[in-house]
Image (tube, rainbow, N blue to C red):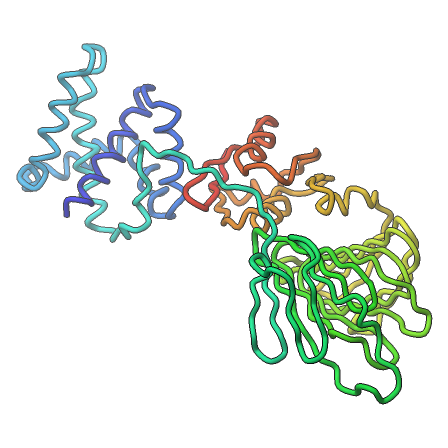
Length: 397
């Protein structure tokens, strides 16, 4: 019970200090964090801020034996009151009443101690930007950590060579003609949240994989097409081959190219798939049969909820800024922005107010810097504030 009493005393003191105007910025952040952790917490906070209700609760407590269970806390309150100035001494009875009401409420509504473990005097730990991180899954079931891979790996008769710290290459294997090899052998590179990696396929096509993405591909291209399977976001620089079109399958659509550069993004937790053409020409086709051809500077958007495919002109440099070390926020909601940050910094996001998700931002923030520095840029708009607890970001007004 000791831990619960400590929590009760801490929260009641903070509400008391908030009412008297003596609460510090750090204490205010803690109180706001506590309110956002649980709907019951917010309800209790609002009720206890209502002075008339508190006095009513105090009257109801008359005659109830609460002194003995709270004796330790009352002693601490009296010690604290001795240190308060004469101006604040008159609030002592109210503070004690708040403690009593809180104890009653906490006994009525069970508390998960694990949710209330955030220290009041916490030191914010920096969350660093993502970096080179990926694993290679071979068809025979082996899993290779590409971050620690020294030189290369052989799968069947094909060599995959790590040519620098962030790039794996199958180049030189090319495509298989005729009956030399009928079976396609697949590998998969998985980039976790907080990671990125580059890949050169057997035909020389280069793929830049963003955080939280997977690419499944043949180690050699066989037959009349080059088909790969993507989940997440990637930038493709496709080697031209008119006899063997390159196709990218991603969720509910397929992108077909002959030789071009384009960006495609389709995460499972997002409602749309975006395909942006940089150079050349691509054809986007959905599972439902819709299709369109994109010219450079155009972007298709497939709504995964209703299957509708649309097209618009965009600034491609802003779309592919992630590949060049920047986040360019162009008329994006806070929810969309925080989804990108969550994948790149491998953290979770909690909103104190759901309406905050719809705030629109514009601007440029660096990709390879600590999360707090990035959030400070957004805070300068005075539209939103952020607090960090371990690997969780709390968003509030």
